[in-house]
Amino acid sequence: MDTFSRTLGGSGIEVSALGFGCWAIGGEWQDLDGQPLGWGRVDDEESVRAVRRALDLGVTFFDTADAYGTGHSERVLARALGKHRDDVVIATKWGNVFDERTKTLTGSDDSPEHARRALTASLTRLGTDRVDLYQLHIADADPERAAELRDTCEEFVREGLVRAYAWSTDDPARARVFAEGAHCAAVQHRCNVLQDAPELLTLCEELGLASINRSPLAMGLLGGGHGTGRRAPAPGDIRSAPPAWLPGFGAGGGADPEWTARVDALRSVLTSGGRTPAQGALAWLWARSPRTVPIPGFRTVAQAEENAGALALGPLSAGELAQAEAILGRT
Image 1: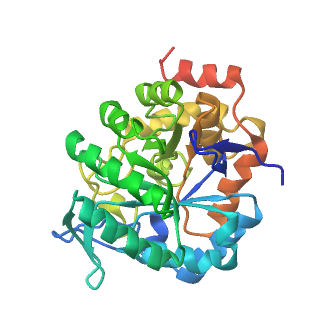
Image 2 (image 1 turned 90 degrees about the vertical axis):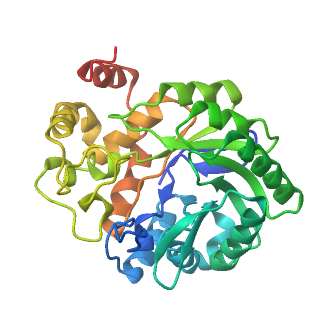
């Protein structure tokens, strides 16, 4: 399959223009109140097959975090990659504290000491000697503290434990703090056709950073399933009891009718060229900026095939991008 690629900032690290987000394959985990933080139950064997199918289809970038499934996502990814570790780029994150035994998120730790402990633990779970992109997972961390963590990341680079680093945050001012580091290569932030991020995309262009797009399918709303409002998330899925930071879903997990209406309005442009709605949403991100690397989640081989299939279809045309913006009233 013909694919196209992106480079992570000035790092020289080349990745497929599509990454795979590994939050969902971490399985079920929860906060201290028992609220779900995962995407429900998963079949680890299917997760492994899906990762390997993604590799077959040209995906070379996998994004996870130590907290996803309280370590489980990293372990499953390592097992799936096996001897192909050196053929891919692995991104993971740190900053959250969790109990693997009870699969519970217990807090966060923004200390440099924790960063080193977390990195050591992630390297062990991932079965590797380096992380290609190490990302701060505390979106609202104090900027002065983050500057210390940026310097800690530079130490990790000098030691050969990390190749490049980034901050997962939706705040351009915070992203700029990390970008002052010589080996900062990206910002991970929310961006999709329903939730554009012009300030962060401008920042990435200005500073030469990659834009790694979490929630590229709006947590499934752009994928044609939950977005139709016909299928509610199962218990144990974060969308079944959405926290305040997760828009687009009602209290019972069903899609917000206003969001559903926007998805329906976009359907014709997103499905141009034989694309599925999910492939169209990914194509919008590629058309939106040459620095974007969307990282849709997956739990099955079929989802892996659909997402990876977007690579062969490429970005929307300039005309299709303009049409989508006009439908959303953003022109």
